Image (cartoon, rainbow, N blue to C red; front, side, top):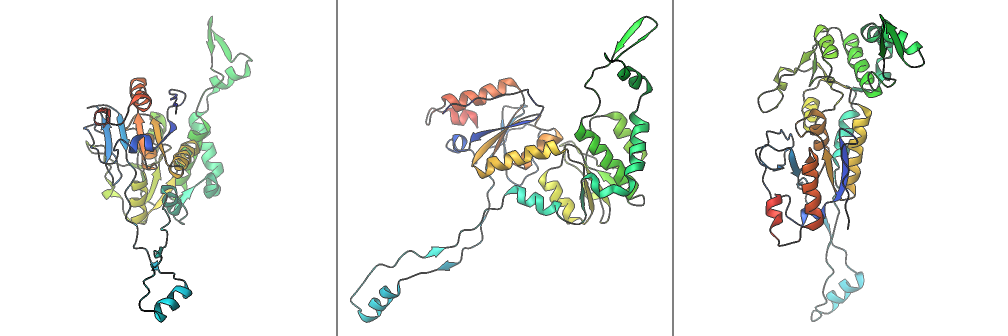
Length: 334
């Protein structure tokens, strides 16, 4: 089987690799190197190279509930056993009920369906006009508007020509996240509002949230977040990058209002790794292992491997293409 890995088309890309390529070499019994990455899941992560972003994780271990046993025998055989004590006919194996697998996507959706979980611009219709004016006041530019009136997006001043890129500004997902965050502040003026990370990587936007008295959750040296400052009834915003499944579970237990500003394109990647899980594949994630978006995506995977650069991609690709059982490379890979 041939594998091709494509990188650098997107900041974060998920590719599928058959899980048996890794499981046959013992992933699930490995160790995690000192990467400095924070894996928020209960199962162990697995690293490659000290200080590297190269990380993989095995399929989660779940303990299914005890199956109910329902013996099913032919009445004919039972009659024969009762009528002839000398007969020793073998009985069929008892049938067991199959325990349905609980996919990570189902856990996430169960939380998102609760009444105190807000997502989508439609939930804040009452403040829509006010928030639109706020955003226009912050981001609109008279000079840029003049430049856009020119077919070449150009303006000249004192003999100097200035050009504006035709594709500029925030993407749709970021605009949506800002709108939801500002709307939450207007909708819950008397509540204590927190956000689990920077909304986006833009100092101007994050500073505006600070001025709106939004509390940014602090992190310790291990990149762990301090949720002890969040109390029941507070409002917690999830950033455009999303949040890990464990963070969503913890917030759910705290009985707070959650405003989910996760970019739909990020959630689309989560749906992709869910497809990998259903098909028994390993997801290959291209991204910085400690970045908020990568950590959130890893938490939505059953089995994954995270690569940060071309060298790590080549290392994984070479292993998949050329490693054979018993050649000792599995230990090196782990």
